[in-house]
Length: 342
Image 1 (cartoon, rainbow, N blue to C red):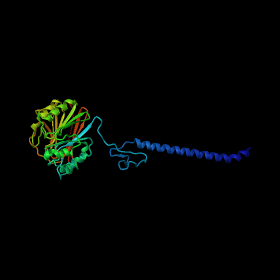
Image 2 (tube, rainbow, N blue to C red):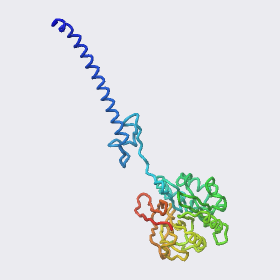
Image 3 (cartoon, helix red, strand yellow):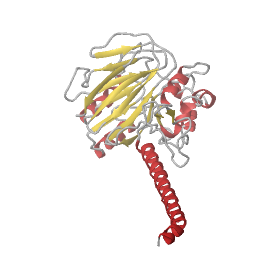
Image 4 (cartoon, rainbow, N blue to C red):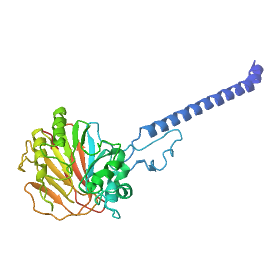
């Protein structure tokens, strides 16, 4: 009996050895699977740091550096669904100068809709100037640019090159005024170079447009400011349109023409402060052409600056707005604030 047990011992030992090797292989396979799963989970759930990196690895330089099957991309900042960005300036391009290139660099890094408040070509409004001077700077944003003309845009052939260059957008040749909605806001773009008097076709259109758009928040923009501390002074031709906009509860007006930045308190049609129903005006002739001196400083002018190119950015909210003047690189002036719609 003892002999038989000893005789089968080698077979039993071999069987045990095979069983142990099998279990080791199974255990190793399970461990490898679990480790890979943990690594994948950590990579997929770890958030990106503000500089676009994951840990110490620059994700933006090599998004496949961690795992070949895992793609990681930094998420670009964007406005919330209840906020829409409207950004721009006026008095923009002069051939051979770099101011419009500097403000275009700002726009390249700001999402949203772009406005211009006239004198897109701040020279003679020729086809050459639009194609070769305005084109390489602000012209790269035509797919999201909503312009209005200024007096310089009308110098050549009654603005024919202007309408040619911006054709395909919202413009109607010979008119240059239109409106659009941006989130909960209604936005009105007007042409202050043509007739804008009480009995004009343009003002009749404005009345109809406002009557058919009952938005809580409305912004209007055009070239020549009703109120300004600039060299040209207040423009009485805009009195009728200001009265109509005020009567319909418009919240914000943005203008150019004066090569400077200025912000007013909310004003009534007589230029008096009205914090309940008044319209806040911004003058943003800072698109890159040149700088003007101040003239007579107007009452209720709250902020003004005449040595900085830049753009004015609005965050249009459901029932209000934030504003920020953003200077070109190397300049320090800025202006920020918030207000509610009425």
